[in-house]
Image (cartoon, rainbow, N blue to C red):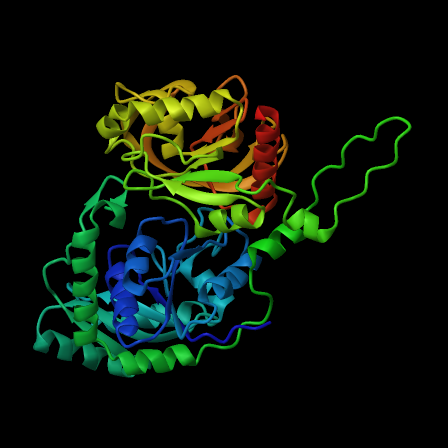
Length: 484
């Protein structure tokens, strides 16, 4: 099938130009007109999609050509934008900045081409006048396959400044679709890993998004922007679906035949998509202010594989949801909430007890810290024999990874792509059975595999390997049967 949803990509020459303010403001402004707006973010960012979701009332989704492969960008976009009137895609870094050493791969420009979407360039004009025309001309002519459909000038100082900028851009052939005045920063505070997530400051975030929308409404030509979005070409190909993705992924290995018995029957497509699972098989997913990093497709894949996905908050809940047979703890900021997490001793013991039972536990980054013996000197769950602490150095980047040990997520030798983003250190960095082997730039092993636990710093996107979700749910079924 094809997708013809009107769409815009909001990009900039560099980080810090105002992409998030403009993209979020546009989403909220169009939503206030009664449009169903689909929010998207290029790259592995978890925080901006929270503000996008607040602006639109829909799940913010990531489009990452490195983690998922270029071939999945359009299908995942079509999945998120299904039934919408407009899609707004916020870019990452500068327009042409992608994965290090990989050319255009995973850049905003790459994603715009994959989506056949026009680009609106947000330019910080605070320290320039006529030079803005040279900058815009350079970006518009660098790659003929990238269509710069308009410019939004940000941080403009005065009417005179605006006039100078417009005059300079008249000959560029790129229309000015908005001018935002230089104002005090909209209330979106940052800290060591970027903006503070919505879940930690929801009331203030609502006000911040409303302010972004008001700023955009006052300074941008929404009708012209929507007309530009409607000019995007139709996208051919399939729309991503969790059940179809599971059905199309390689089948699990056949059981070894019993001597004298009949040969095992290969599972059919429907069985591969949704294995036989007991009613009420619960997979608990950590949420709340301390664990805000997750991709929506993970829960969708777990549900398609037969699990009942339920959310719990380690800051507030003193026990896991009743009937939990699997646990997923994604990324977030446990270092900010270490005292509160440590004080919730009943839940820490419940998590440790579940892990001791052999039930599947998948932990990424923040989840790894929570499962460790301690974090910044405070007791955590003690599932992993390691200590975690804050560090001054930022670890950031895409990773090519190979599974070192068989686990609830992957067979040894399986390859996946992932992303690291943290200012913490876990010592030791790997267990007797490590989770992944990575090259950054030298080869190393990291993470922990023990019983049903897979804990690692690596963030992965399961849409790139749907069998991960099926394998995890199958291990939950096995653990339930053993416990029963």
